[in-house]
Image 1 (cartoon, rainbow, N blue to C red):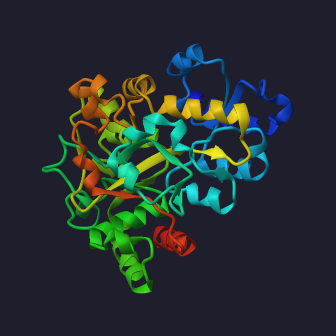
Image 2 (image 1 turned 30 degrees about the vertical axis):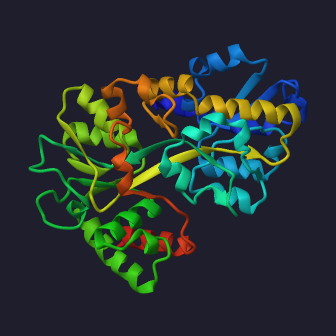
Image 3 (image 1 turned 180 degrees about the vertical axis):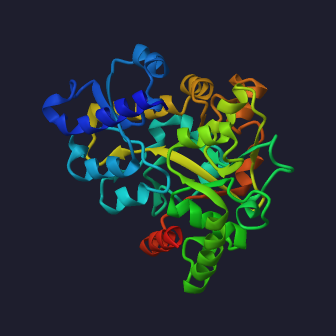
Length: 355
């Protein structure tokens, strides 16, 4: 996303305060979807609009926290559909902001990949409140022309060959997860680590800090650091891999056997949406999990939806690009969760950075 798109997203996200019941389209046919701008492109939604007597208004978010704050502040009165992260749904349900998904109204949900059917995230007492929508991975991206071999998480903690040429995202949750994976702490314990385990994490994170070129916040800045060779290896999002390969740079993408951080956003319906609005909202949910939308998202994103609806419509190259050609990649996924002691995690992370 370029700066202009970021600005548009920020401005659109702040616009929700102007929406109230008086600003809603006809309640019988109109719905408002609060989501990420890249998911609601006009061409992605055109087939749905053409096939249904439904008017759709979109308002864009900049962060999940922003979306949650607006809904809790009263946005649920004017919003019919939202897009929370799979790991964030529990915040919404704890504040009684969502209603359960009525799967009878979402036939395409039957095509959810098994990983998303089985996940306990997004659920309360066996009911689903956030249905997995689209997903991806955050791997290790590296300059294959400047590294001797494909790295794993140990590159950020061991050896001296790449000191000063490594980068890590400045995000306590992911940074501590990576340290825990490196230490061999199982996923079942990762988000509830005790003081002894956190002390071990802190020790290796201090070693990591001594090896880093930088902690990154902007994926654009990280891409530039890769391009200049100032950074040769980073925990990253996927875009730098494809962007720099397109420019002729030999890039690699590693998915460490110790675990790969997976991410997934969901579709959720605020509590209080009912009648024709609810019918329209679930019609859109079903479309978003269906083949037409899935193919456009895969080609234009490129992102994978959480169902197999569009998979067979994609070329092998397109399937590989969004990680659905070989679904065994999900076997090593560690999904982000909300640690009960996250305040301690943030304090630990900040102490390491300041050391």
